Image (cartoon, rainbow, N blue to C red; front, side, top):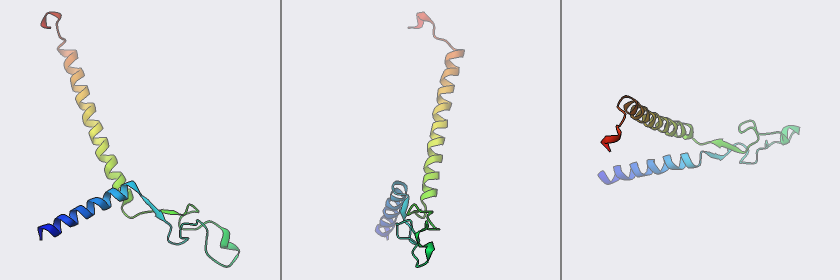
Length: 100
C-alpha cells in the first residue's frame, strides 16, 4: 500500500513538472495545423479553437505556473523584508571604528 502511494506521488510530481515545462499541446481540432478541416471555402481559415497557432494549453498548466509564480513572489518578499531589517539595524546601530 505504501509503495502504491509513493508511486502515485512520484507520478503526480512528474506530471506537474512536465506541465510546467511543456504547457502546450497540439490542438485536437486542427491536429496542430492551425487550419480548419472542411470542404467549403471556410476550409483555409484559422482554427476556431487555437486561433491558428496549432497549440492549446494542457490541463493544469495555468495552475502550475500560477503556483510557481506565487511561491517565487513570496520568497522575494521575504528576501526584501530581511534586507530592509538589516538596513534598519545598520541605521539605528552604526558600528564604531574602535569596535573592529
